[in-house]
Image (cartoon, rainbow, N blue to C red; front, side, top):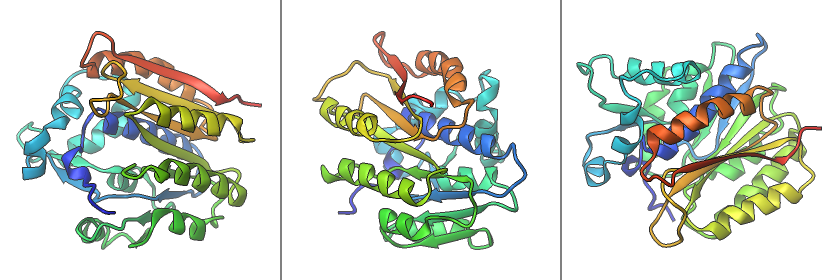
Length: 282
């Protein structure tokens, strides 16, 4: 099933959270000179027109990245925001385009680092390819992200991160995520695995929390931002990231950022965030 298109949702509050966490992890990896690998299992098109016909139907970026645009933001967000500003530097101060996770990684990774991207959608795959056609660091495959993850591990680099961001169109995708992470850690115990999830049905979030908490994993951090009060009827009210083997600074960074992000992105007085260890550091 390939009906999901991120072009309807690019730059929304969930992207802001996901890409904030992604950029913080990549910035942490860059503190050492040694090369690392970035693996993206569901890469998407890579870059999105915020004034496309798809976006005109939803306008979700208006309650997401637009709220951060051209205002004073915490310093920890600057690497992420600098990429967005560079992408829009010819737009007379207007927000026209938004980078997906692979384009953010392309700009944040260094010459010695390597990127491995997967995308199955027949319309998004060629768009992703065109963004990276001159980038010799990057391998792009039109294949299932979890299959590509198994093939990619263990990497020749001992350091790096995996971003897992499926569309969650099908119920089994929650189980696929858990299985993919467990299998991945068997092959690459030192890798950082960052899993994005939507907050739509509480049972699905509880499933992820329960499975990751009960497994014998390294340190695992849950980061969640809910812009609307919880319900099981009206679509996505928030989103979260589960990070296995997080950089040592990530929890403190999110403790500093989440109150500000929650206030800035709130769509309800009942907006709230969650930050907790599912598996504590040893």
